[in-house]
Length: 109
Image (cartoon, rainbow, N blue to C red; front, side, top):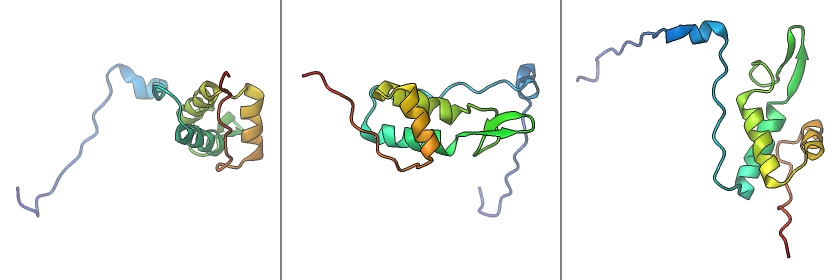
């Protein structure tokens, strides 16, 4: 193939009208175990993809999809696996700092 070849991309319609029906994408898989790095990514996900009230309801502040979006759901689940309670996750979102440090989980003695 020459370097001057033109590539064409055509849209393929989804079977069953998934796009038209507003079908929700599947959730992002969770890591097998949650590391400190995963927790920091999760904090960023829940803060950046926080809820925002709009005329049509609550949407994701980052991408305007219905809230909670995929990344917000993933971040919430990862933080819950890390040991944070719902109130602590809500406090992180309220604070609005995507670089907030998550304390390590409590380990049994």
